Amino acid sequence: MPPFPFSTSFMFDFELTRLLGSASSSGCEIGEFKSGVGALRKHDPESWHTAWLSQAERALGIAHEAACAGYRVPARNAFLRASNYLRAAGYMFGNDDARVLPLAERSVAAFGRAAGLMEGMVRFVEVPFEDGVVLTGWLCLPAEGARLEGGTPVVVYAGGADATKEELWFLYGHTGPLLGYAVLCLEGPGQGMLLKRDRIPLRPDFEVVAGCVLDYLGEFSKERPECGLDMEKVAVAGAATGGYFALRAATDKRIKACVAVDPFFSMWELAMSRAPERFMRLWDSGWIPDSGLDTLVDAHCRSNFQAGWEMSLGKSSMGCDRPSAMLRRFKDFSLDSGINNNNNNNKGKILDRVTCPVFLTGPGAETVMYSSADESTMKIDRLLVNVPAGKKEVWVPKAVEEGGLTAKIGAWALLAQKTFIFLDKHFEIRRPDLGEYSQKR
Image (cartoon, rainbow, N blue to C red; front, side):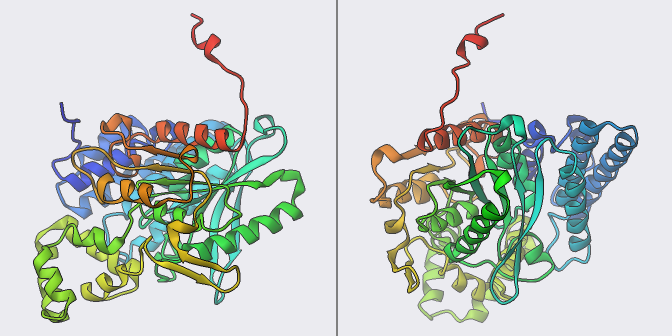
């Protein structure tokens, strides 16, 4: 039996599942969700904005009431929901909409209020990058009672094309510290505020971004030894586009494990799989001019809401104003690319350079949002030739409740469990077997 849809719009249904899927980590409340869904009109971004802004304001009111009463946990949870609803409120708009940046800023501020009420320390960090650009993130540290003996392993969690560092918390940022891990929820170039506020596009060479982040964490661990970061146990993780970034970051030998959730192999190949093949080949070979492609794509986007939304995000993320320019830049985002870094002599194709343990997943549901497991996951698995079989795990679930949707939407708690079991195994972290407790009545 197919899963129950929250909307007749495939895109709305996917994003609603994404929103509700954060409920287990306080990103959504069932009653608020039902009320919000009831206010939606199919493919109407204004109704989407109004619905989730209304729930955000409601959650903020609850948060302030709880805070004034001295109720730390209810206040924290309500601020978390408000942050997530504010993120959602601007989601269906293009980044040129004047409402997007103020909503994003309010989402960050609400999360900041929640961060100050958490069990472990959650620090807002600023990582110096290139040309005066500063990368931002939330470094989530385990509470004293959750720390592991021998040091705190670190997960650098990279966002994808449309996530924010605040939303990242609802997956690994929530679960990791409870299990004794530190998790850095990171926004790189072309993500979050760097895209919405600064108009900085995505970069394909995420190993450069990761290198700066690892340098920062190394210095932080020396300056703050009381945090107990174990820089010999650093993992990188990401979903969808973030999964691609994670694999590129894993070429840095300081990364000791990689979690690539539903990554694509090539953004260009992914785009071609969703476009008329013959037409695209004629354009790519020069037989059809850019103006012809741009006109056709623009017409399609006017008649198809999801295509229009994806095109708006794609052009913004790539720093392009025309579909043809965006598609050409997609070619740079490929795991078939080579690395030629004179500083560390990392020469060769991306996947040839990955030698650390890799947890690789793919979407197995009948309808996927972006790349399929056959097109990307299994191809990547075959090409990770320098990762021994015993250090690779591939997970391609089919059912929605098992993580069959893209980026494991709707099954984040299960994804987190499988991720940290994998990391525990390869970081040689031993925990007591709780089986005897689970059998007690």
